[in-house]
Image 1 (cartoon, one colour):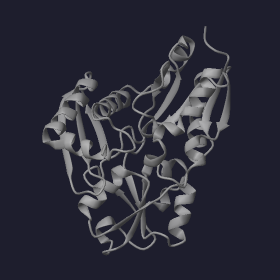
Image 2 (tube, helix red, strand yellow):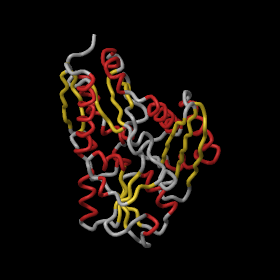
Image 3 (cartoon, one colour):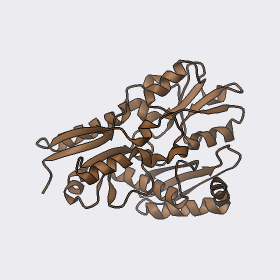
Image 4 (cartoon, one colour):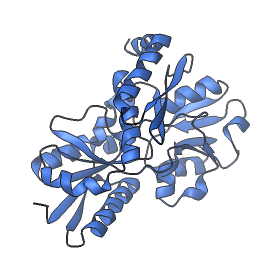
Length: 308
């Protein structure tokens, strides 16, 4: 029997609330008689926005409290940016739905310069991501990469205050908040390989909630879900986390899928990358195969060095 009322748990940032309201509207359109409520919550990750995620426990800090709310029955589903979802969910939970991916690219934002290549030596670039930092340092060693935390409006305010010459953000977040005009340039995957799952939303619920799995099924976007499955399998095979500079991006064309991935040292001194093509309906095998290819190129040594 389908539920008559759904409570969505979400972080309280402007972007997270947009995402929750988006799913709210999708559900309302599908089920006009369904009562849908949003429960905003502050997570440990939100309380420590001044500290690097890699130092305080990683992306799981953004989902732990939401999962606890699902466990207690205070909420039924949680909406996440897939790129913020740990590779291994807590026991008893599942990503029931992956929505159609929005723009997966990174965005270059600057009030003074038009592109990354146009930044002068010693220009200060802010980013919250070891993935971005590794790629930036490898391609532009003359730049000064500095940490940047906070929600999207806070990050934009910091560049407006002159604390950075440029910052790198996810394009999807800026577009969802109506801030597309702040994008100076969009970075191609060749310039900055996206994070695993970037641009897609995931809906999490308890694995034993068959009623929710049935109700949510129409929101799942098959092509995006296949791509994200390949990307997450690739990351899982390489122990991907906030402590590992890693990117993965898959695209489908008909029955085939192309997956690109990289692993790098945080300082950009070493970076291994590759791509593989395979059947779209076997995404996990493709992700695992690309991970093995990168390990053969030296990814294991990079990963081992990060553990020391």
